[in-house]
Length: 160
Image (tube, rainbow, N blue to C red; front, side):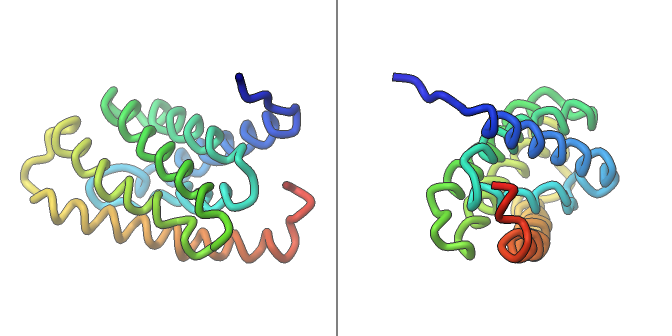
C-alpha cells in the first residue's frame, strides 16, 4: 500500500527544498566544513507543520550539497543525516522543543564522519568536529528554527 501525496504536499515539499538550496548556496561560506552554521538547517523545524518537510528537507540538502560542490559521501550520507533528523523530528511534532533534537543529533554524529573520511580532515580530532557541528546545529535548528517556528505559529498557519 503506497502513500499518495496531494498536489499541495508536493508543492510544499518543493518550496521547502528550494528554500534549503537557496539558503545553503547564499550562505555557502558557513554552510560547509568542520566549523559550520548551515542557516538552511533552521528549516528542520518545518516537520512540526507538515510531513512534506521530510522529503523537502532531504531533497533540498541533497541538491544543496551538489550545488555546493560536496564530495559524493557528503551528498549521499550527509543528506541522509538530514532525512533521519526530519523523519524523527516529524514524530516529535507534538512538542516543538523536541523537533530539532533529531536533526542536531544525526548531523552531530554523521557529518564529522563525512568530514573525516569523505574530505580527509584528519588534523582535527573527531570529538572536536562533533562539538563544532553540534554548536552550529544548535544555532541553526534551535535558535533560528525557534524564530521561524514562532513566526509561523503567529502568522503562517495558512501556509500549511
